[in-house]
Image 1 (cartoon, rainbow, N blue to C red):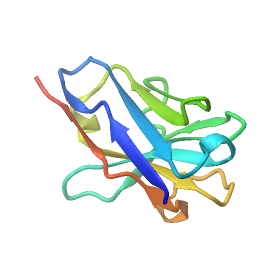
Image 2: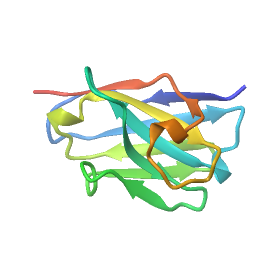
Image 3: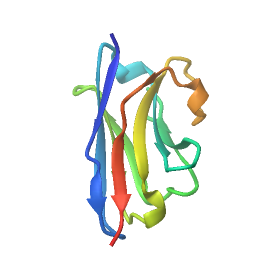
Image 4: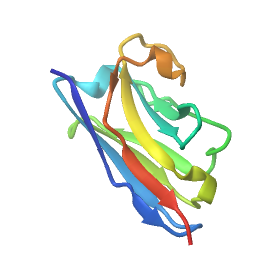
Length: 123
């Protein structure tokens, strides 16, 4: 059974940083695209970043230069380092695994999802 567990969310002031983790069990992440998504109240889920099995990374324009996705295949974990956080980054953040090997941040293309972790950016 595939399980993804996100952690690292919390309350942070504007300009602050957080690092989210996505730990997997029941699947070896090495070969697959892993994506981070977020969903704010009243808004659709949007792709934030994804990383391929070979380490290629992709970012939404809204987070480019501020967020960094990485993976540790030994720990079977993917991370999202978030710097220079803004109030508009406030959302529930989800990680997801895609079995199709497609470079995309469309949520519909992802197969397994975590339960999400809340990120709140506020003074």
